[in-house]
Image (cartoon, rainbow, N blue to C red; front, side, top):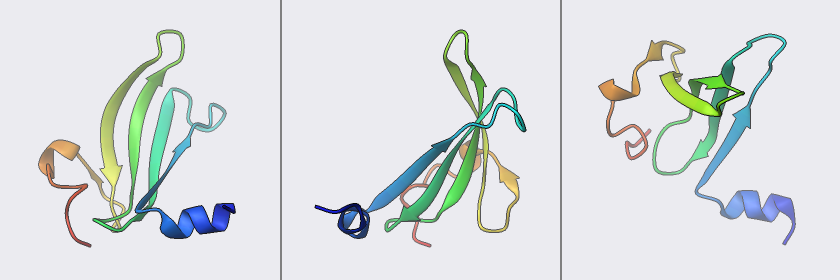
Length: 79
């Protein structure tokens, strides 16, 4: 199948992003499509030498940094 068809059939699309020049030690997971919930940017701290990744929070539609602990149903909620 072509990539456009795979994207159309997908329930969720997640992008991983790291920019060591602008945000050293940071990594983002960007949820660009989520049929079962909302889209968001989730920030993590990233330690390259150890490969350790820790959650910092997510940016919802209103772009406020929130903790994932405050919304345990984040990935299952309806938008």
